[in-house]
Image 1: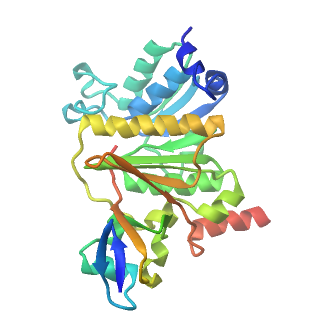
Image 2: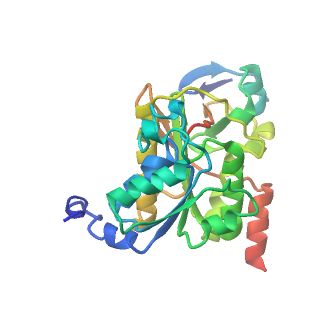
Image 3: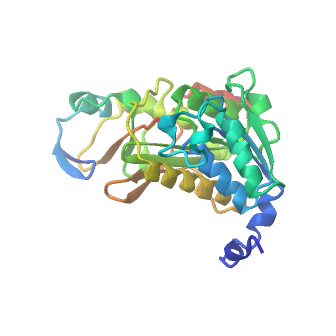
Length: 66
Length: 245
């Protein structure tokens, strides 16, 4: 199935979770936040958040500066 | 005369009058907190608490525009108080020179209508979110590094807000650990100004509570996302349980 990940189409396998995808892409959950179709996905839900065909996923870095 | 230009804007005619009776507590007097505090004082805020126990370093001066070379080695919150005093001697600035922790947070936030997390320290940020939730204080968060800036406003004084949008920990997780990255002066101060604007909107009744803004420096875009509560978040659960009692 296909999702839109950070603005680009991407093929992902059925049953893939948000956490699993980030792991595959080398994105550390503790350093990132994510949203699906304009809504933030709480960090505690990443593990069980199943990706579905057509979903628009945005993952962005948490930043520490000031 | 001082406020005649903002008063020309629709919705801003009463801003300085509103700010004159509000108090803001800011965590961090560096790249984000320094300019933000100065802009709010310039806009008419008369009561500020600024917490920062760090001293000014040479490596700060490219982005922390409230300090000069003579300030190196001096405590940031005291230097910022001095600069705001030059801008408007009527502003009451409390420089909080102790490191803010669980034990003194209530003292730091005492009397504040809004608490702003503008630190570069994620542990302090998580503590601030948790303590503001406990104290039911409205809370603004902003952070910036590399090419990303983010800011959002949490209306912790409103249980309906918490039920829907949650807290910073819901979004970032209790184990949040952003990577330490580089930063430019102009970009740090861009996000600082955004934080000041957001704080003003909190008092004007026009703030986009519950929306996370993610600014991309390279693309010069801002994306906005709706914050959502994690039903399993222990901090939000404690807060909502305390409302029921």
